[in-house]
Each structure stands twice: as C-alpha cells, then as structure tokens.
Amino acid sequence: MINTRILTQEFDYFAPESIKQVVELLERHGEGARVIAGGTDLINQMKEEKMSPSCLVNIMNVKGLRYIKEDEGLRIGAATKLRDVRAYCFKSRYVALYEAISSLGKPQVWNMGTIGGNLCNASPAADTAPPLLVFKARVKLVGKDGERELLLEDFFTGVNSTVLQPTELMVEIHLDPPGDGAGNAFLKVARVGADISKVSCAVFLKRQGRTCTECRVALGAVAPVPMRVKVVEEMIEGREIEESLVAKASEIVSEEVKPIDDIRSSAEYRRQVAAVTFRDVFWKAWDRAIGGKN
Ligand SMILES: Cc1cc2nc3c(=O)[nH]c(=O)nc-3n(C[C@H](O)[C@H](O)[C@H](O)COP(=O)(O)OP(=O)(O)OC[C@H]3O[C@@H](n4cnc5c(N)ncnc54)[C@H](O)[C@@H]3O)c2cc1C
Image (cartoon, rainbow, N blue to C red; front, top):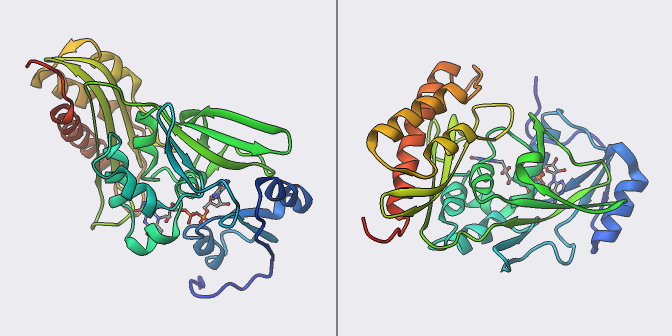
C-alpha cells in the first residue's frame, strides 16, 4: 500500500546560501541529488515512493532567488513563493498569472510552493505554465557550465521532464512587457476549485478597435507538455474579430490538443472543454484589452 504520511528513505540534506554552492553540491552528489524549493510536489512524490533522492539541496535560503521586479518586462526569481507572485500580479498587466495561481491549490500551497517549482516539476497541468507561455516567458538556468536562457516553450520535454541537466537549477523567469492595447486572461476547469486541471487555457492579445493585432494561446493538461496553439494564433492575428471567427478558432483548438484519458477526465471531454474554455478566455482577454475606438 502507498505510504502518504511518512518519509521512509534516508537522504543527505543541505541548505546553501548561494547559487554557486547549490551548483557545487549538485555536482558533488551527482544524479541522486535533487533541488527542493517549497517541497509541495517533491515531498509528496517521496512519500509515495515515486522518487527517492539520496541528497536534497534546499534553495529557499539562497540569496538572489526570491524577487519580483519590472525590468524590460517582469523578472521573477525562481524561488519566489506563489503567494508573492499572486499578490504582485493582482490588478497588474499580468492578471492571467494572478488567475492561474488563484486557481492553484489553497493558501497553504501558495505559502510554501514556488513558481520555479511549478515549472521544474513539469506536470502537463502546471497552472502557471499557460499564462507564462502566452507572456513569452524565458527561463534562466545556471549550472556547472555557466548560464543559459531559453524560451519556456523549449523547456518542457515531456511529462515530468525538462531540459534541466542534473547540475542545473532555474534561477529566473522573465516575462515580456505586455505593451499598449493588451489584454490577457486564464481559466481552468477542474473537478472542484483548487483541484488539478482537467483543462486550462490562457490567452494574450492586443487589439486596435475591432482588429486583433497579436494573439497567443496556450493550454494545459491536454498534451504531454503545456502547449501553444500557433495555428489558431495565426488564424486570428490581423483579423477583425467576430463571433464566427472565434467559434471556428475554438473548433481548431479541439483538433490541435492531444489529450489522454486519465483519472481526472476522458480525452473526448477534454477536447470539447478545451474549445469552450478557449472561447471564454478569448472573450475575457478581448474585453480587458483597451483597443481604442470600437
Ligand atoms: C494540496 C496541493 C494542491 C496542489 N494543487 C495544484 C494545482 O492546482 N495546480 C498546480 O499546478 N500545482 C498544484 N500543486 C503542486 C505544487 O504545489 C506546485 O507545483 C508548486 O508550485 C511546486 O513548487 P515547490 O516549490 O513546492 O516545488 P518542489 O516540490 O520543491 O519541487 C518540485 C520539482 O521542481 C524541482 N525544482 C524546484 N525548484 C527548482 C529550481 N529553481 N531549479 C531546478 N529545479 C527545481 C525539484 O527538484 C522538484 O523536482 C498542488 C500541491 C498540493 C500539495
């Protein structure tokens, strides 16, 4: 029977204070070492014996990993708590991220969990991923070979898998500035509030009058990785927005997603709900965009 209450395995534990020390520890302890941030995913996986690291490197005391600042967009330190990101994004130009975190777990989870942990755990249903994808987020990784930055859409490689090397950690998430005439929104469908998503969707767009000049669409829990739907983005960009166009786009969303049957939902249900969710999120983002004369 699965143990969900206690940790049975033994492991070394470190709480370094600098990024350099984290990288050295990861290198010294090899493949068995694991970064731990809030632990809201990792500790559960260890209790369920899905993972048994021989060494945990806690990054919550590391200086320079917890911040939110406006600098050519929004820069968020990877170990910033969900609570702080949520508070910052409320009534900001990044409201889709506020909506995503609000739908994620409960305050206890926001108080412990981090934005970097949500991405590095790489669940297809990670709720911060769709809004970050539509904000064209880039992630900065640091490892023994130095620093690299890549688009978030190139970070995920499969279910619970990413491009992160064993000696690397994520240090920053950088969102593009939204600019004028922009609107964004996020919606999630789950069994009850705060449950893991059956389907989630974020839209970012810009409008001028009735014309959509820029559009990005991302969905979660409908493919092995959180995904952009670029064919729909191209169909909408530069067009006058009418109900019929958005209805057609939502049909294409349901054709493009690659859902599976699992304990939360059937693939067929996810296909249909993806279309409806996209449509609702699109109109919400559209109404939020300030686009001059209508
Ligand atoms: C009751 C409950 C409800 C939840 N509901 C939701 C939900 O609705 N939606 C949702 O998306 N999630 C949900 N979660 C999952 C979880 O809370 C989030 O994914 C959270 O953001 C994870 O962050 P963490 O700091 O706790 O990560 P951890 O558990 O500390 O780490 C997760 C993984 O990421 C790695 N990692 C963490 N930070 C870094 C870093 N900076 N660099 C490299 N690797 C790193 C760890 O090694 C580990 O593999 C829920 C969890 C609980 C317990």
